[in-house]
Length: 213
Image 1 (cartoon, rainbow, N blue to C red):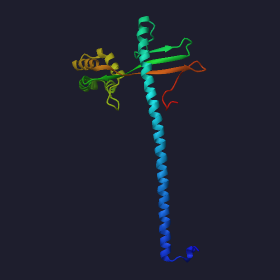
Image 2 (image 1 turned 90 degrees about the horizontal axis):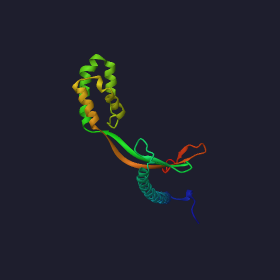
Image 3 (image 1 turned 45 degrees about the vertical axis):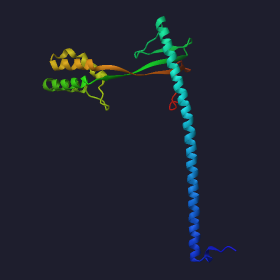
Image 4 (image 1 turned 90 degrees about the vertical axis):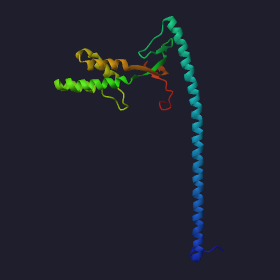
């Protein structure tokens, strides 16, 4: 016959408590193991599917770009290519409901000559413009400001170039010449996107990104 807890000796109580602690610890370890197994299963399952989708999407992108490049040559010969400002083009279905856009992704950059131009321009502004017109000095200086990545704003530099004839100081002219020479457009990549008209006859992007679905 099993003793009641009140009937147990101090030694027996200690043994019972130790047994309970061991049991609780084993149950905790078991739950932890079950949790880690389930976590591992779902991660591996989702990643496996993601890898498959990534490979399919990559293959499709290569196929689409190749088809569009081939068609571009054909369209150029035919004289019916519709170019956009970035050097890409778009194609529509016969009824106008579907569109494929082939885009050239570029990045405007300035080489090391731009830093020389900035130094010359700052020197000129400090020595000449700042003394005569502080407002103009601040405006022109602001056009040379770089963003957080340390890049110049091409639109701002272009604004400086437009007023090249405003001053005849050799530093000013040399600086703008260097800015113009240092500017170049880099081809980053080519991309393709797909559109379908909605009920309001507006082109709606067919999202191929999981965050856009």
